[in-house]
Length: 95
Image (tube, rainbow, N blue to C red; front, side, top):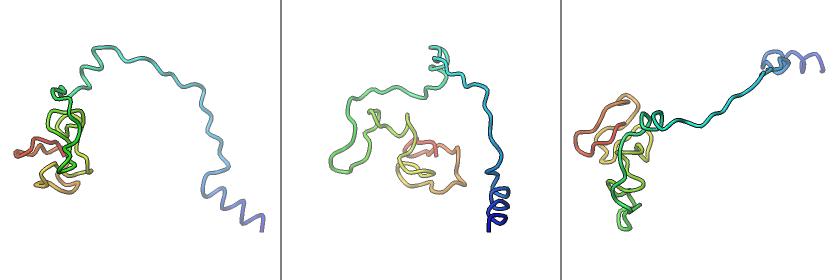
């Protein structure tokens, strides 16, 4: 029983110990943060209370922060991973 348990551990790689010497974390520079940015929040609104969709230009804007649903633009024109990187001509959201 123990030999089969040991062989299973070997197959799964549980016997190997991953040794990490160190992990370094640093604060991003203002230039790096500007390179990461894709837009500007111009509206203090968050979500439309009728449609429950993010307001355009708001704090949860899909154009700025990406789509709410993975691989789907805001209007639903482009759905699925095959459209990865495509910017919708209707809503302006990058899939």
